[in-house]
Image (cartoon, each protein chain N blue to C red):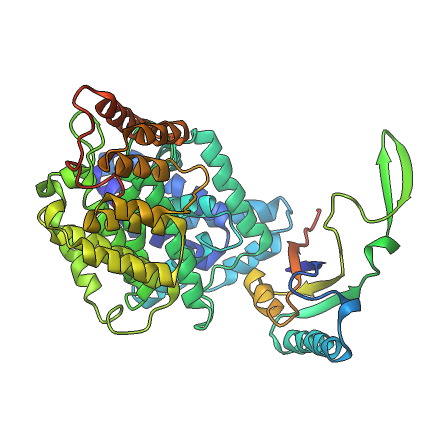
Length: 117
Length: 427
């Protein structure tokens, strides 16, 4: 199965801009450990992973009554901050949840990828 | 439905679901197929006689149904087709092995139904349905919701299991105790919904509580050395053992002090006592949840060991609640401790133990304040608290009890100070 993991909010991780260089190093180390843990786990593969720009760099596209509007800012009803994401191949939800313990303690959302056919 | 069928459904349903899921991994098909098999049995067994191996008969019929459905799906060119062909080729599991493998499959089923990614209420309903084989109609009745509502809730939970890839698997040893705690919490949630319904006309729903006890017992049989499940089984057995004494013939609430203790189920109390003495929970460090269940069970065991409220060792009950408050401080535990303090040292001490306590939306706190105020002669303040309790209480039987107490307090003879052995809180 494929899963999209959204790093949805800072959770217990301090804001990046307030972190010391050593703390930033430690966080980066956790991301690297996660990569390694995924490589070592049978049936698991990171298909895509990116960090995202802060919410105020996002652009929102909405269509209402057939009319498209383009506005600044994060989509209001979504989580406040979307920090990054992983697209994972994994055998089941428990494998994903287990691997995510390696990442820094962000609030996360795990969604299964659906085959629309 | 013939009794053989009733019995096999009651005793074997969870194992059959587990076995078929282990082979086909299709929750949707497995349950429908088993339902079809039971229907077929209801038609055939009365006519032809029950088969020698009823569970095996149901399993065979259900397995054929699943294979038929998978073939039909493959023919229809649906995307599951590949999987179906694959499954047809897979060698059948050793059917003659009813041993550990099957028990592990049942444990897999329990863990799947009580996965933390499912809504807890749906999880406990799903466990009653899939592990214990309680029909959707009965699960709905047990949780006091219309059948279509419960059917939709169960369907949603099953869909989440399939879509989100919640595995039919036992997690590795390190994660298993934590997952068994979720199982315990889910089962205790179902038990509490039966033992003390927050709303509705009945003080207790003994059938739901009884099914939850059965669930705890079934799961503990798979992991008898688990301290959390052991302590929980003791706790629910002790609480459930009082079911016939908690309401009188008119359906009125009977306080613990006034209960006819001959009507308690003494075999269940004895079983709980043995569990509480088992090396799994005695003289060994316990996980926090196991500890909270154990302490509450020990409180219930103090009541069970006493011939009446007057002889109860309230000092020991207070000490147990003191430990509970260290382990897992919570407002309801403080409330229960205050009741025991009042019994041990008088209503003033009980009121002092309630100082500063707040439980939003609870009728129990003002009801107990009212009782303690009445016992210390402060009738006006007691009535005020009773009115607060009445406004917050959604359970009809408890409301009737509170109204009776109000009438007694305003009646010509004044409050019955000191004659109530306890205050409606049981442990």
